Image 1 (tube, rainbow, N blue to C red):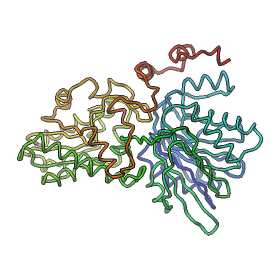
Image 2: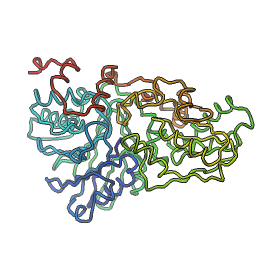
Image 3: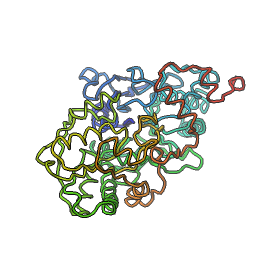
Image 4: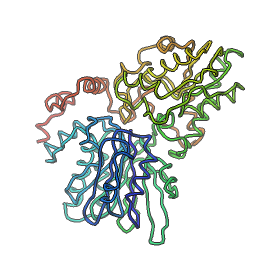
Length: 505
């Protein structure tokens, strides 16, 4: 999961992009980068770390220009090396920088095609560098390498949609021409656009979440439509075109459950409002499964579960208390590599208020249960604080399957719900009882807020992959790569993908 932003302004954009990345920091804490356009040249700085740590005064001064893009990242494909921090750059044709949120499911096949057929060298194992080179190649094909106009840009994006599979929300710059933004034909990852009417002319911001636009003082214009491409030239003129055949909107349900900030609006649905609805529908299930008097108090696991927990307590007329206090200077455990690190960080991140637990039957509400490590530690903390009984509730359904579209949970054996019953999961996290949200209730929580949303990417819950190209063999292969990291072996990839290189040549 990553946060991306692109800006075309009438003045310097370095500070605007930096501020936007701070507002999107929750989407990635691994690395950050900014690339600005200064005339026909690019200025770029990127490194591993939080936004505030990556950019110093000297770096900001070097980022000159009135247009630029930025990204805050955590890795889902490739490694966490600094070389794979974004934006990426390629010098032909025209010079292009690109930042990407999502994950390509056919990046290994494309990497081979780039080398064998398109004569392009990919220097890392990042799917984003592959995506950049596909875009660069298609722009070259559309322009013959000489001139560029919006029609040629849209033709290139249309060709890219036909080659690329997976999820991708993209911002890119073409040196001397302008900024390009586009979204995959399924609309899995969010992308929206805002504007500002300055005295010198119109200014635009494209970002992963609306909170980045509003925090910068820009007015929200709309979401980028699945399959759509938007091109903003250096004079601030905006062009747009649908570039995909039969696009459909399938936003990632997990964005609403966990990743997005509650003050964002994604595809017309307030994240905060959807989380309130999750609490309301979860309350209905708790009411069916527990009799009056079995629960004394409702407590959230801060922070993302707080709206659901508050609404649940309100609907059930139960006492609501903050039993855990969060240390906000510890990173998200979900984004931290390694189970041992996650386990240790839970108690560094959360501290229990013993008086709120002592002698009570406590209902703990979390946004989801992924690996179960955090849940188990939290239940133990509640018991150590004197809770008489601990009931655990998840505002999301059981996470049973890997997400291959940009969320770092690719191994089935890492998911506590994979291959286990709810009773078995309850015993694993050492709770007295466990309640999961139903999938139908989760999707209804979103569609009630915006009735236009009817389909969702919910593969981590139901195992249905909307792009249609994810098989059991594919999941086995990415899990093997995760557990045994090594450089891509061309012969192995060719065999696994059933790719005939002779035909490509």
